[in-house]
Length: 154
Image 1 (tube, rainbow, N blue to C red):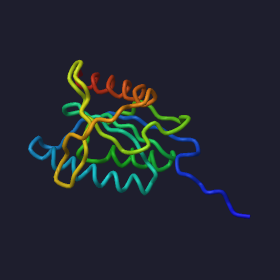
Image 2: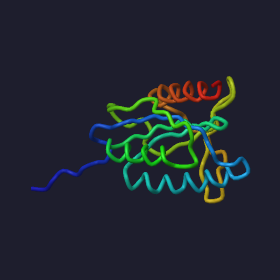
Image 3: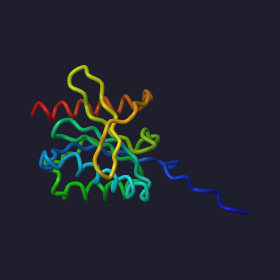
């Protein structure tokens, strides 16, 4: 008799959403974010953490999904990262499942403009081909957009 395979994310999923202000100097943002996203994708994959990141001017809103312990540990690390300021927890708790099965990023559009999906490279970030979103992703993204708009108007 063999044990059933454990599929990461098949168990209860913990979701955490936060907002922060970017402290990276404007002339270094593109390269720094490309390096940061590449490293985060690798590290988060090893911890089975997925999520989405919205960039809105100088603010970030990020969703992290996975097991609670590694997600909370990553959030704690982010709160101490000197590239972030004014880190604020928006929501955290168990959810039925992952909404973002792979790391995704977008630049929040101004007003009624569409968000721009981004892809990370070692030398920076650039626009990526658009992907259709699911209703579940749109619901979470709406909360993220509202949090980004609140930060931008503050």
